[in-house]
Amino acid sequence: MNRPLVGISTYLVASARWGVWDLPAALVPAGYTRMVREAGGLAVLLPPDEPESAARTVARLDAVVVAGGPDVEPARYGAARDPRTGPPAPERDVWEAALIGAALESGTPLLGVCRGMQLLNVVCGGTLIQHLDGHGGPDGAPGVFGSHRVTPVPGTRYASLAPAPCEVPAYHHQAVDRLGTGLVASAHAADGTVEAVELPGGHWVLGVQWHPEMGDDFRVVRGLVEAVRG
Image (cartoon, rainbow, N blue to C red):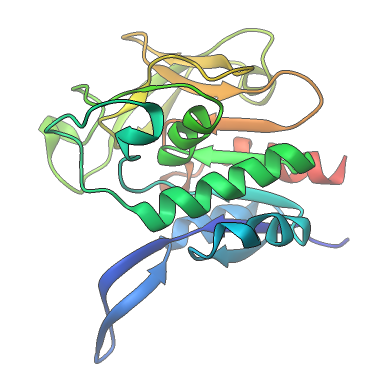
């Protein structure tokens, strides 16, 4: 059986170290490629490029994953910058918004992870909460993932993949505020934070606020791959 080709957007960093090298790099945590492989897909990396290339890129893929990362630039959803919002990543904002738009236009299955879910909401015309407490690492420790429970909304695509509440690995301080056009919330945290969004209907589009690549529950990615196989 052919393995579906799944594109994963990447970070673009000024400095990364491996071996004797310390150089600018386009990279993604290895958990992303692992979860795609475990779900039966073949992962390819999509570093930031010209947005005009997004439609041609997506046309050569079976599915798209927009990875987690820096905060979305608030100007993209018409908001003033909160002092607690992190530095912008304009190359990623532009490229990934174009990838999302191309996937939505073409009907290509799409999964957004954390920032990817937030940017999906923004592309669809929604807004974000720029800061909330209690969703990062333990006691706000930088670089340490926390864990909390998410509860699916019955009748949604996410609920069909994960019908019972479950613990998920999480690390974020921003979240969906006003839902984008056409999107529905399909999971919530105990405090009411939107933990998953999706487009109802035949087009497979799902965003999750947590980081499935940091655990071993790959049901959402399996759902993505199965959407390709029909």
